[in-house]
Length: 359
Image 1 (tube, rainbow, N blue to C red):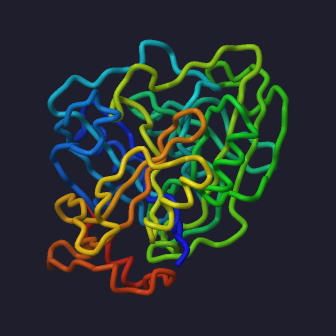
Image 2: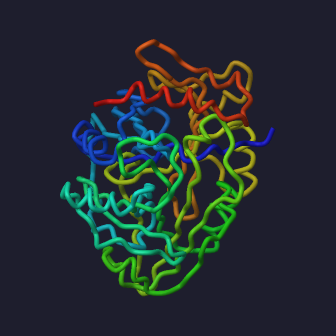
């Protein structure tokens, strides 16, 4: 069986105060349904954590309007290190996270009333889609993109993760990676210019190559209906020397640390990535490919995770979820390995996740 990518499961965000940040995302962005809350030790990421296991606390939380979630991540045994330079448009790595909204004007006005730091007004991208930029309480950049797909209507004006803006050094190599590895095979636009809708970003008045990628085929798999479609925007700056956002820092330090995709058939994906020249750099349980292999356990959820890197070293995570809590109060967990891997879970079942909503 070929591997299946069901969508963006989450974008990881390193923080210095998990509870304060978690509350902000819950109150302002509607990420109020936790599916994992797991203090523990990151033992498998030694390549990216200074060669030593690191204690951490991770929370994965969802917005029930649909889209990917957020993994809010804090070190417990070391002081998180911020970049020692100002992160600007064109720097290499995840520059901004995209969230979606089917009420973009209302969302903009609501954010203004809440005194969220807005970077300019509602603008249009080269395809004519409305969007606006804002910063969270930690200074991370988000882009709200107009999109009418809603999994479950809530009182929020914004939904979940819809993609990311990623700084790259070579557009062609990056297009190939995101197309061949992640299935973003459609170019929505490809422009080289000084872009008016970037004018309020740090270094946004420079000339950029800008490519918006989407996927022509609907995603399949257990969570595909909820995770929905997504897009990746690649930007390459001219007349400036970009820096690597995580240069000389650890995975988990403040900022956007990874994009994580929900997948099925890790064995097939491992071969596919290796054949394309992007082998796994981390594998939580390489023995799982053989009968009787173990799985990672994050308290309420379990499965198998791996990492690869895009051509500039931006981290891409893959998670094959084996067990997930559906209704925590009742102890109802779902074993996904006994299901047809291509079939989406019933919407009614996924909507019961809202029973775990935090007020």
